[in-house]
Image (cartoon, rainbow, N blue to C red; front, side, top):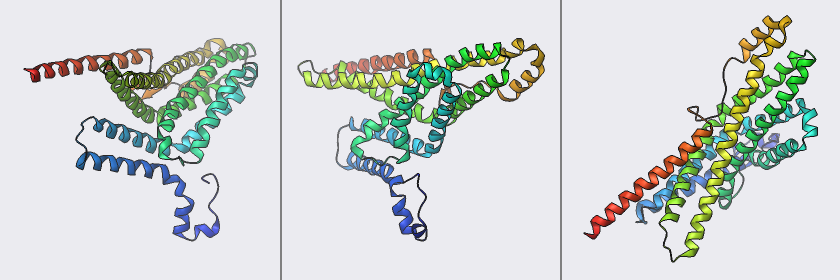
Length: 320
């Protein structure tokens, strides 16, 4: 319904407008109601401190939902850019059908969710928030493959003295990276914080779970594996995409040496459009690279050791 124009007989009444656009607000409203219920439960009923972690997770999930809902038009445009770049590199896409399959995954898996604006029930909330890292992973894989095929295509175009085509392809790839930098950096940062918090909680609970309760141990281990996979879907593909984007930029910067007759024109075009380095980041602060994964895991282990030490010291003091 979001992709269809509102009928004229609906546009004349505010009530009918709300009914027509009701699906746009269903899922955020359900999340808000769940968050309010959790706050009331913690304030007046519950006496368990562990349930505050549930409140934090719900708040992060609501934040992710608002961010993605706000940028749903940009996500559609990003998907269209991927399709346009794949058409520009169609010779290699036909030979490498794996790239086409990846694009189909991106389009068919995430585009319908954006089109219906989260018109799903709250029971599917966890599955929805797992789709954001999956979507980000698929887009990064697409950009990595595009950079690889761009390098091969550039070698062919250099032989044919067609630097305009090289700049045209790179312009589309650079604009796609800028779009990802502008509107995906905040949602993916919040998602990474959510994943890291859950990963820490499941890891800590698994390490200090009772040895005689095997069911509880299996539950914590499955949660640990799930969120570790989500973390691996977020960081390594983005780091590889940054490396591939840097390689593609080096090819463009080296074009004046390959075309001495058009050296001044190429330098002018490159200085106008491609001098700014674009990379995928977390909230436009942390550049994503392979060292960031080690830093995240090291931070989780350090805080786990710290809290376990403080817990053992407090328990020993209570025994005394």
